Length: 137
Image (cartoon, rainbow, N blue to C red; front, side, top):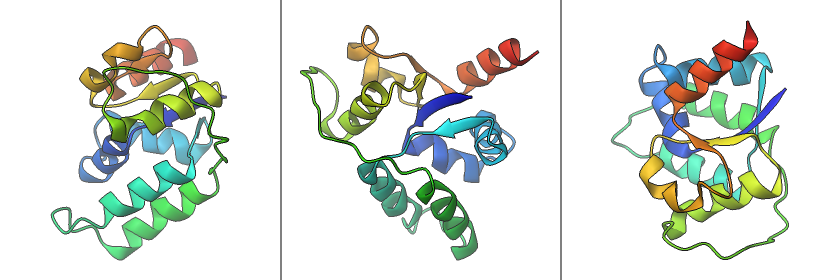
């Protein structure tokens, strides 16, 4: 199984466009093909963003993803390392990817993580799906 850290923007995009690559990632999570690595801080951010009024998500949609993700929360022990040029709000994704030895971080904001490309694998949802489909067959 593949363990991945999934940025909040990918989770939100899966609801907005279920036919796109983020939607496919959501399907892979629900099927158990990939295991999302979620820390309490990541879970809190997803919960907060799902409640933004601009998205107007139905309560059932929010409940579905939060219930599913809550089963995958892993406790982050706070080990940190020096990282420069990554937005402070995005550090939690880098730390989780490294600490839990996830295969990669999947994000739509690659530019936020260029400084850590030598520390963790960072790929877009489309790249992840392309890689997954190439190795699954």
